[in-house]
Amino acid sequence: MTVWDRPEPPTRPAPLDRERIVAAAIALADEGGLEAVSLRKVAARLDVGPMRLYGYISTKEELFDLMVDEVHTEIIAEEQPGDWREVLRVRAHRTRRAALRHEWLADLLGGRPALGPNALAAGEAVLAALDGLADIDTVMRAVETVNAYFTGAIRREIANLRAERATGLSVREWQRASGPHLSRMLATGRFPTVAKMVHDGTEVDAEESFATGLDWVLDAVAARLARPPA
Amino acid sequence: MTVWDRPEPPTRPAPLDRERIVAAAIALADEGGLEAVSLRKVAARLDVGPMRLYGYISTKEELFDLMVDEVHTEIIAEEQPGDWREVLRVRAHRTRRAALRHEWLADLLGGRPALGPNALAAGEAVLAALDGLADIDTVMRAVETVNAYFTGAIRREIANLRAERATGLSVREWQRASGPHLSRMLATGRFPTVAKMVHDGTEVDAEESFATGLDWVLDAVAARLARPPA
DNA sequence: TATTGTGCCAATACAGTGTATTGCAACAGT
DNA sequence: ACTGTTGCAATACACTGTATTGGCACAATA
Image 1 (cartoon, helix red, strand yellow):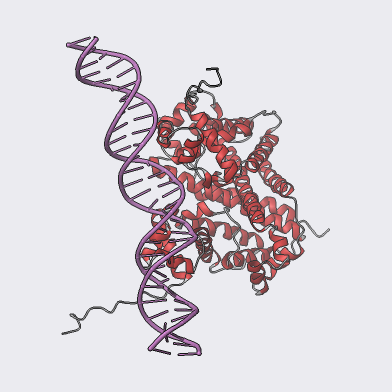
Image 2 (spheres, each protein chain N blue to C red):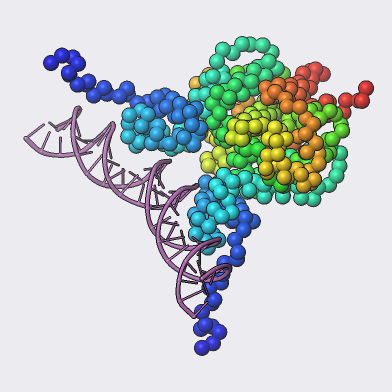
């Protein structure tokens, strides 16, 4: 009767808590997308019955909210000061990076108000950076405009990325290679300008395009914020 | 034995086609949100077995794509010419209106590339309006930037609207009324600027806020497009 | 006309889903 | 020693998207 014969003690699974649950859910989502996240699979990953989870979350949507907030830790990490413009800029880029690391984030972005502690911390950081540059309402609108831009831009980028992955080609390549549907559409001649753009446009780097649009929006914001105190 | 006794002939259900299927799905989604759309319910609404649908669509996602494209008819309707800026502006506003009529649109907006005929027609209209104002890549970036803005803005607006409906109060009212979660968060003092904004900010009309942000973005775009031919 | 093929459609089947309800077993307090 | 109580596991339910099967009406053939 050596140690090796002795059966492992039942290894009480590490005590459950939200953190572990959220981590498991994120892992699943990273691997197989949001649709791969089921309460049963999350529970299984933690060696626990599905209903255990309901002691910590009360609905699947709530789990999603927690996942989103958790990812915000990657966004608020290592904040370097810089002026307001830089703050907005890096926030947008960090969010984009987070979405590239966790593509499912794109499905959730903007889907519900983000009121978790980390999301609030992120919001606090940018609001603090803009505070005082203009009246409150203008500042709010500035932040919301930039947010709207990068939310939309990220979603589109991920959507295209997935489409490319599904067909093996970018939309442009795909249509050039006579991709069945789009080509047929463009061939109808009903969309001449679209056809031209697809045909003649250069394939721009996604990050650069994101950055450019962002800079435009930031310029617009700057025009309203930096207005001299009169 | 009068007509009244005679049983109705089995009233062959109107022949099925994509249009009818999509219409039924949209009706369901309008009533109960996207999650109320199940192939079974769509089929039931058409007095048809669920599997019949697979003769016309090959997956539920495809049905969603068709729904989105169908709504685009409301967006391209009655296009008045106007200059490029007006075209972009009304497109954004029409999309917003469509999303207010069909809230589920917000869940789908930007989620996948919109390649249906109506979406392409919408794209054609705006590209045609911008064609020639700058080099192709700049034009593309302009359109995409505006798209990103209004996609994000619409999503956020609908998200807030739902949250308000769920709690009965706007986020601001809610927190002022000591809404449990957010208030506790703000009371921690960790988010002073957010707290200030929530407390002192005025509640702005959603449409106005949308329009304002949009105008900013359009200004930014204008600065790159209207660049004199040098 | 009888028979065979064929294409369409309904029904059934399967493997999952989120979550409510029930049952049980270990511990706390009397 | 008995009785709550509390925390967890198992079961149960209603539903999902979709693959597979089975039958039935019509077309083509003999």
